[in-house]
Each structure stands twice: as structure tokens, then as C-alpha cells.
Amino acid sequence: MATIIAHPLTGSGLSGTITAPGDKSVSHRSLMFGALAVGQTRISGLLEGEDVRATANAVAALGATVVRTGEGTWTVDGVGVGGLSEPEKALDLGNSGTGARLLMGLVAGHPITATFTGDASLSKRPMNRVTEPLSRMGAVFHGREGGRLPMTVTGPDLAMPIDYTSPVASAQVKSAVLLAGLNAPGVTTVREPKPSRDHTENMLRQFGADVTSRTGDGTNVVSITGQPELSPQTIVVPGDPSSAAFAVVAALILPGSDVTVCNVGLNPLRAGLFEVLRAMGGRIDVLGERLEGGEPVGDLRVRGGALKGTIAPPANAASMIDEYPVLCVAAALAEGATEMRGIEELRVKESDRIAVMVAGLRAAGVEVEEHDDGMTVHGAGGKPPAGGCSIDASHDHRIAMSFLVLGLAAAQPVEVTGAETIATSYPAFTAHLQGLGATIETR
Ligand code: S3P
Image (cartoon, rainbow, N blue to C red; front, side, top):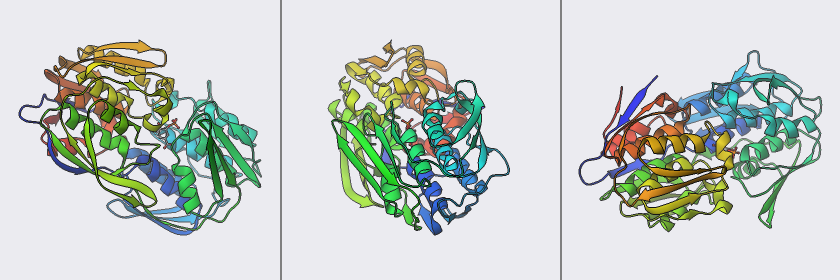
């Protein structure tokens, strides 16, 4: 078990430039959709974290040829929609909910059987949110109580297209159903209460699928026409806003900082955190905004300074769903209360992020109220929180990185145990923050 300690920053803030690592959501999808195309997909900027590597192994076990040709550059020779073969061994998706749920959708659309396993965190997470609609399409699931992994999936001879109304705004649920629908004859439709990230729709369109989206009254309706031939693509993966968020918040809360995070994906369904931080008074300038691989991308110049509390709009929760732990850290350093509600989904992430953040913030001397659907952090107006605590990462990379960022602004160091989980999404995290001037040591 790795222990990492973040020491309070002495001196005048962080400075320098880093490049955000590849987007995890887009990286998973590049490999999966490449596996379903006929011919060779070339990917650059792929995130080489453990979650995405687990997906690479899984699509290879399902019959695609996956080759790493250089740093972040990979090729996938696909087998075509309907062409996946039965894997010989269980598919181990490690810590990755996205990998497990999207691949369950893929397998459910093929007449094959596959068993899914994962680590202690993934084995606790609810899979019934995908097994329920996928069962309606004809797939059969045998898992543990409550729809937990390990779980065996058998797809039907011919999947049935469905019209599914999802109770949650979840890109994983939406994508699992659309991916099963890819190999179903006819049109499969998913309705979600609010739009969730749209990488699946955008990328499948790029690969040649017929995907339509309609948003009205806040709801989002996506349809896919099954059994297309997908053509291979050249994919440039944008930088991950969810990973960039850590350096952005670190720079904002450390007065005197001047940090640029390059190549940050700014898809509006992912970039909600930056809007909230700006509403708190955060100085974040977008430089050189451009389109890369169809996604808006920019360089974020961030300068440290005073922040004030705010209300994070529940209506925008899906656009920043992974960023609440690090928003709590910004909130702890702000003047006044920051209210984060409408985020009960956080309770079924890699950890129960509401409970784990509340307990950890209290241990670090931050005043916080827990709600069923979120939390309210009472900031101390820039006064360093006490720190001097040890936080168990709880198999959750974003918890680990958030508390290390807090440690930079605390009065005493903050230790994170189980910090090896950071390698699931951001293997260069420690090196990046050290490069900006932070003192972070691994024991
Ligand atoms: C993801 C969707 C989100 C997010 C996860 C990645 C994706 O999960 O939390 O980290 O790539 O589709 P939900 O779909 O459960 O909201």
C-alpha cells in the first residue's frame, strides 16, 4: 500500500505548466469502438492509467487486436459490430465502473458469455442499473446479491431494440444500452432525466453510426440505429478536465500561484466545475480554445487568490459529477458556505464520496454538514485548515488526490494511505504537482 504525504506549501504559490493526461472516458470508448470497427483505428493521447489498460485487455480478450505503438499511441484492429468472440478467461476491470458497465453493454449485444470481475470497490458497486435494461434486450445475468460483481453475462442470439427511460442521468447507463443496441435490429432509444456526458454519441457518429440526440425540458433522448458498419478512425484524445481539476484547484487555493494546464477538454457536459470555480471568484482564463478530434479543448491559466462560497447548481451536477471531492477542497478555503446538493449519485462512485469527504474534511479540521444528497462546506476564508491527519483513500483515486491538494494548503501535512489508487486515472499526478513546486512525498 502506497502512502503519500502532501506538505503545506511554503513560499509564493505554485507555478509552471503541465499538460492534462488523456481523458479517461474518451480513452475507454476509443478502444471499445475501435474494437467494433472494421479495420484499424489509431489512437493518440490515450490515458495509460490502470482503468484504461484494463479495458484494452478486455477488448483484446473479446477478439480485437490491440497494440501499443508508443507513449499514448495505440492501434486497435476491430472485428466489426457483431464480431466479438467469447473470452477464455474472466474480464477483470479492476477499479473501473465505466469499463465494466460499457463492456457489459457490448457483451449483451453479442451471443457470447463473459464473466466480469473487479477490485474491492468495483465489487461493491450496483450493476443493476445496467443489467435491468440489458435484460430487457434479452441478456441474462448471474451475479451476486444486489447485482454486484463477479457477474456472468450471456447475450441473446439477437438482441432486442428497446426504448428505455433511465431513472438516473448516467453516461454509463446510457452508453451500455446504446452499445447493446448497436447490434440489435432496429432503433434503440435511451431517455435520461438530464443530459449526461455525450462522448458515446459523438464518437459513435464519428465512427459512422446513425445516432440522434434531442434535448427538451432538460431531458435528453438518444437513439441509435442498430447493425451499422463502423469505419475505423484516427482519434486524438483530449486532456481530461476531471484530472486537470486537481492542479486547477491547487493553484486557486494557494495565493500567488500562476499555473497553466494545457490541452484540457472543455466539452460543456464535462466542464461544470470551472464555471462554479469562476462563480467563487477563481481566476481561470481559457487560452487558445480550439477543436481537437471534434471536442473543444483549451489551455487553462489559473491564478491563486481569494474565493467565496457559492451554491453549485444541482441542475449542472452531471457536468461535474466527478469533481465534487476537489470542489470541497476549494470550498474549504473559501469565505463562507458552499452548498453542493442533488448529488446522491456520489454515494455509488468508487467510494461513497459524500461520506468519505465529510469524514476526511472533519479530520482535517474543516466544518462540513452532510446531507442525504450532498454536503455544505463552511470555508474559513483562506485560513489554512488544520490538516495533520491521515486519510484512507478508500480505493478512490479522486479522494486520494483531493486530500493531497488540501494538504498543500493546510497548516500541517496530510497523509493519504492506499494512494496507489491514483494510478487508475492519473499516474503522473505526483510528478505534475511536484513540477509545479509542491512538496509531495511517497513512502
Ligand atoms: C463516466 C460516467 C460517469 C463518471 C465516470 C465516467 C463515463 O459515471 O462518474 O467517472 O465515462 O461514462 P455515471 O455514468 O455513473 O454518472
